[in-house]
Length: 475
Image (cartoon, rainbow, N blue to C red; front, side, top):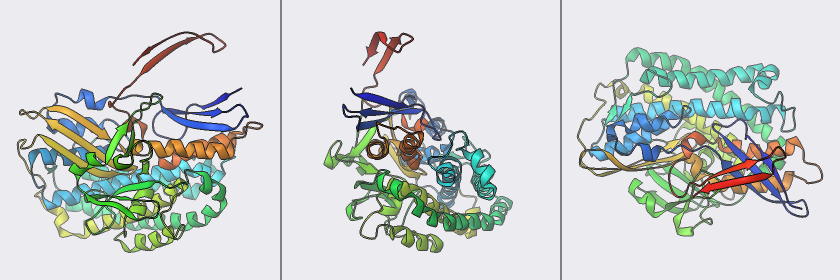
């Protein structure tokens, strides 16, 4: 008989989800599915609101990466106003985005994923968490806490709040950077850089212990999507979209924001509130692609900062004939990006322009449609708005990084489950490895569930044995 194994909830991620693994009549894994069980319809309830409110409204989708939504939303609003924001505002937006990347990557690597890497995939789940890491590896745990705190403090120093600040606004930022604030951040950069470099040096030999996971954690050819500068350098705030294949060959390059609907479409599956974007020219589901740190390192030509440039060369040596394919290497890519972000923060703060008082352009709406694209820690983030003559939102669509990765996550957990889950002996460590595939992507599920397509609701009444007595469904 067929059998279903359910992992509920998926642990050490942001948001609520479960995984079902279906076994066939022979007890072998047939398919695994990731189900996102929460729903938040931000696109619908922003309709009718003044477009100037959109950055603060949409940032409320998440307390982990609100800066990412603030930036993509503000960029869409800049376009609605048809303004060119001041150069200092661009630099300050970049600065706070790098701070967001630093704190988010530190959270993902040290707090959520390091228990698997340090304590082992088969270790006791009762202690396989950040407190267990702190007990056995206190120095590394302290480094992770300090680095995340550094990123959060940069956000707070720039914007006045660590979570949901109102500093990023249409047209730029609300107020300039003070010299004392700059100096306080600069004083802590050497320690931050030292931790990033030390962690990379520790992690690279660790990879040798996880060859089986590397081979089976979403290790297959896909496309990769990310922002790059017009010259091909990795980009997180601005730039153009690039799509590369599994050989790192460019499929399409220099896509502007308004080009994205020609290349990215969205599907909806009945068993999840998470949309499934795909590369439109290949259709669904063949148009599978990945975004995020792994994708950005595969898509760019160079890092553009000296220390990260050296690390990129080492990273690409993992798979010298093409793109690095295993999603296990999201962890490695995050550490390279973290180092790069710290180098960029150092560069930005060294420029006299960063203290300019010209930080905001003010205008009424001058266009009916605006699209903002930036790179969140988890990948490409798209905010797309339409407004009426009064500047009120008539339509909005948000395409979130975690959504972009949905097809890859589902295919990845199926690959891992087929390798590790054996009907005759289903171990906790095997199921943890299936979960760990999802943790590689560091999904942000609160951000990612929205309002496109069919959102069915099914209610089941069951007895104490789990047998269904009655059910009803709303399409």
